[in-house]
Length: 252
Length: 367
Ligand SMILES: Nc1ncnc2c1ncn2[C@@H]1O[C@H](COP(=O)(O)OP(=O)(O)OP(=O)(O)O)[C@@H](O)[C@H]1O
Ligand SMILES: [Mg+2]
Image (cartoon, rainbow over all chains, first blue to last red; front, side, top):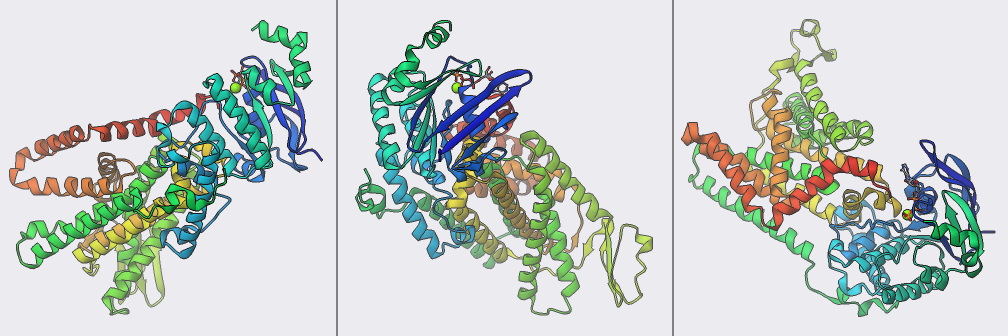
């Protein structure tokens, strides 16, 4: 059974069909790309898959379970985590605490245990710190653990968002332009990291990206969106050679 | 990667975490100031008028710290905080007057009054919280403001008496039909008279310590992180599985319960409890908000300091009669300028981020 099954998903904003008739099947462990010109509806697809927007048509299933109509927090608990195109960190929390918020539903103790400093508090907090540092290390952020998230340089903020998303222990990871604002070196490093976390954390990754070197570098297959509809779909190198796709990008 | 955790600097480090250190400073500060004034007062070195300020200052501090939990930590603007204090004050006084002859151990009765007031105020917190938490920013502020006024109006209209037949509750004083040997506890606009004067500086201090303990430990825990993540970025918090409604309601409830306890402290320090604009109205709510904003959003120690200074000042300045408000205004301005270092900038940022732009942002920003 496929991990993610999207059927005829669509949403309309006051007459504008931002996404129309979107279909996608992701097998477990896939590294899949979603590309398209500006305003094509890529981020909107993510917002639909994470419950931020309610679809006006279609459905989608994760691991055979219906997800449509669920709230963002429920969808995350079911196993979908994401990053944001315009970075959304918890600015006034430390880098470590940002990841610990991601661990919120993974390691628990009650509010009462927290207020009264019961043994569960110390035990779980210690485990949370260890786990969070372990994750930060993957992204080379462990030495910034005590830094305020807002004080991190841009590229590292993007990485922290990925670390926080992985902390929620997802099955499916959605990355919205993870390489935006990164130089070629950083992008190469990021590609390595994405491959690594996919294997190490047993993830399936769906990535939106404008940087074609990243797309052709790591995505096995891609879908091209244009004006909310699917323009092409298939093996990355073949799709990128498709004249329709080239035209859509050049016509931009 | 995945190195053994004991290699990581943070876990191995045995030094005190910055948060723990900050909290410790706050505790020490409160204990030191308490000891100073308790000594002054016990040795007769405090004027009667100044001694009378001690309990009200404690009330203001608890109000400010508990409101900071909503405004500074959760990032929601509430203008009805005095309403919860009002609920607590009336519930506590009602209970104490009712049981004064039954429970003769005064400290036990007083503790029970606190518990009952905390429960009543948190129920009010939940009742107002459920509909209100669907609202955001300015809308939430307006509705909480109305809530505070409604509570005040209700207690001003309510008559409750007790006789051999049990309780009589009415909004019309002529219809109370109480037996001759009965007792009217709540007399509408005349409020509750004869509350035992159980409050004192020591009780106020203990209550501040309990409030501090609850609020600072809550902030520095899994729950506190979830609450602050909602403040910093609601959409991101939801995306990592934080249940927004649950934590908002929790903050409202805890904050209301603490305000209710402040109400008990207040009402057991005066002989006649009535609800007016200046004690339970929007004036009071806004005054407490001023304490919170000037002390720094999310800054508990700041709330304590600003509530103390700003509450005590107008009273201490009474000697200057006509210049009183002028001096008060100047001090407010000076406080702002002093804060203009990194502090005030941060506060301003937060206010603007949390309040005015929040609605616009949520609506317009493409996620
Ligand atoms: N909440 C909304 N209300 C109205 N229109 C919206 C909303 N969200 C997205 N849209 C519109 O939907 C279309 C697709 O937007 P989307 O952000 O998904 O594009 P994108 O493919 O991610 O583009 P980019 O590459 O620039 O990020 C745009 O025309 C956008 O204006
Ligand atoms: Mg986008």
